[in-house]
Length: 378
Image 1 (cartoon, rainbow, N blue to C red):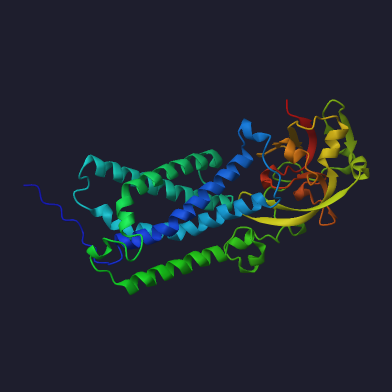
Image 2: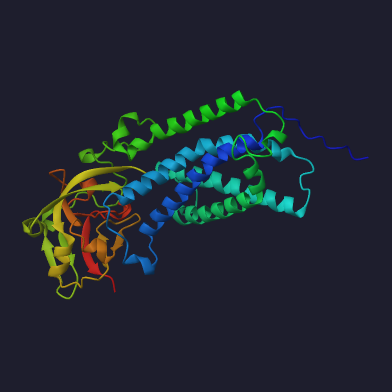
């Protein structure tokens, strides 16, 4: 006779639906903010054709805010997800494991949700440190799995909606029908979880929200550390550029009236100074003063149509984002510069010497460095 399987007994009082629902009330909005701001970041970096010409250039701090929220909400979701999994993990040992087709589908959706959520938070955290110990391309896979997680989450909420409604508030009908739980223990757990979320947020968010930069302990970037007190993701050496000789540099502006400028000729043009943030997908950002020539003026001199999309080509020899494109809103914005100076000093090679793009409300990876050519997109 086959021995009867006896599932383990969990005596902890906090592995209950009420605790899981309370944590879920926090985890759900964190995932929602992370997903929505992630969509903004993805479409800013890889806009579909119908959107490419209409990406907004204002407010100038728009991408800084959304990407800062994306990374902050993702990091805050890590302790929330761990607490949620701790609360519900005894259900893995329920017996029988599959009671019906509906139950099997529910467990499958939960497996997809948990695996996808852990994958998104883990890979997103490693991306902030620019560490990629996997063979696939981060951006498309992270984006695709994000949609998978959202779909599994919506399905899970739909399946669990009766239970969620029953335990949404302390006085919800049906709560009293559950086994009694030590309420002080639950409050202690939630207080500890609140402290954990606050701690990881406080010690990392300063890389984007600079008033809190003094509390940075675990963020991979400090907004003040780098050449000219500005962080750098890709150095000139990593891009294969090195130090470009002053006398060898040429900027080509292609259009109906194409022309080429030396660095001295570029410096002799009217110079403008703007204060703009540079915000990177890894979550750090910092405002700085940039001085250079308006891209709109360079394009107008070449006879480029006002509604044209513009391609910016770097002199870098290797690495991604060697070429970026701008819709007409960014290209014609008076704050968009081909910058020659940073905070009053000549650009450091790691910041794009002799000339780099700086534009409002634009991801840092698209603020092309070591610019050698501007051209109209056919």
